[in-house]
Length: 158
Image: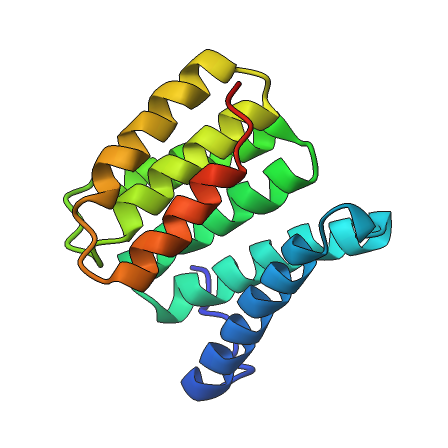
């Protein structure tokens, strides 16, 4: 019988580390074309590490967001197949009847559109981006809505 792994971090430390890794991924995503190959590898590793930690202490909403961020890291790295795989995981988790923040569905659709673009499927990406635009109307907070709208605007769907 397998034993549970020994606790290395308490829940508070784990939450802080998971958040720090999540934020580090965003810093590296924001670096864009100035990111080095080593930083790209760090970005992907940090996204997976953050998701791993949240898997232990978070709920399904954190799981959706974690898979979405991994997908975004892979898309930014030009690894379309992996981006799509993690975007699909994010969609599956969301589709399990998750009661979540109102911005998450739009973000998940945007993430799938981005992943599909990275994989070269512009037709499917346009369809998912259209779904994200519809989901924007369900977001109550204007700042959340504007953020996801700006992420959609980044996509080159022409």
